[in-house]
Length: 64
Image (tube, rainbow, N blue to C red; front, side):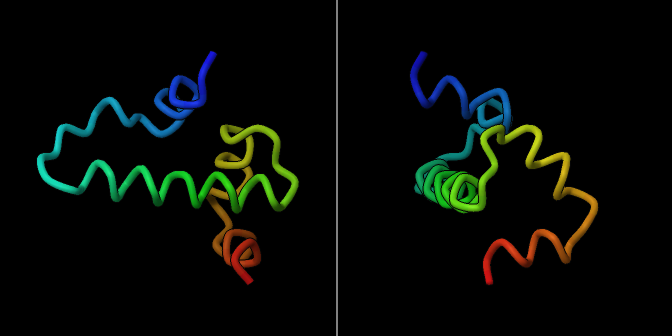
């Protein structure tokens, strides 16, 4: 199983059919977000999204 396969279901990247540089830019932002989550000890992206989705303070502590 490759890394791209893991990203698609979690972030619904198959729903975006945007021309130009937008897909590449979103891919970079997605990779940065995943790296931030992993550096803060989250091993599951889905669980991290659920944990952080309703608390902006927890989310902001990741980037401090």
